Length: 277
Ligand SMILES: [Zn+2]
View 1: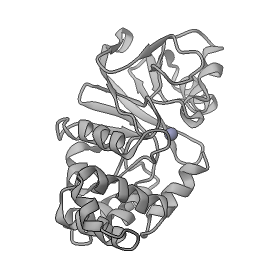
View 2 (view 1 turned 45 degrees about the vertical axis):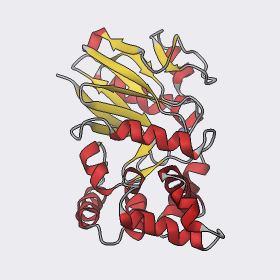
View 3 (view 1 turned 60 degrees about the vertical axis):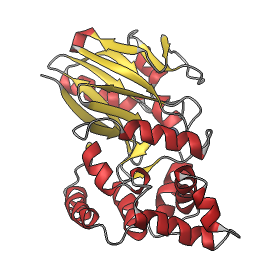
View 4 (view 1 turned 30 degrees about the vertical axis):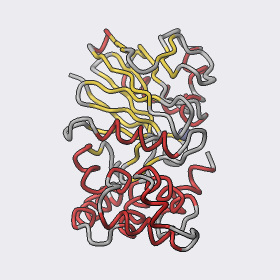
């Protein structure tokens, strides 16, 4: 039976490990040591490595893992990742026959130029694009690309389990509450996720259904989200209403700026952490 286990790395990275009783595949192994230790402890054989984007905290452990035995390494076409055996993009399928798994590859640029996600078995591995109650910082792409990527993910079924690259949930919920203070689902989520963290447990995976109910970046048409973006724009733009009217993309782009500038409670903490990686 397939299990998906988070192996912790660095301060708040999760290396998602897909395993049965004997074999395992890992997603985004930024550090080899915790993976090697986990595989040894559980007596698992590594059979594949999947990477979502080129940042070191997601791929830095790949060379050391390969020194212990060659396995297929999948990652995005068009990003400088050492040791890929197969570069993939939208429309490709990645199969891991040893685990009976098959994933569709989705292009979700924005955080990086060619960031990809793996989707299959009702699971989504989306790296640093969609976070629980937040989204990744736009480093190499544009806000429009990030918006389109989030919309692509939002179109997946509500039941989809979402495995993100970092544990940012509580800080993100703080930000989301300042954007949408009247959202009752957010309050319930905060209580639940706070309990999980206090018990030392991950808040992930989340589900796409929960994200659609609470994540401001998947709720750009909600009046409260638009109003918050508009308030922020009002402080810096001559004609915020016209700017917002250009499209929902702007709402996302400017909501991102809220996070990047730490303009609202909770947002700054996430950015500081990620910039440090
Ligand atoms: Zn990243």
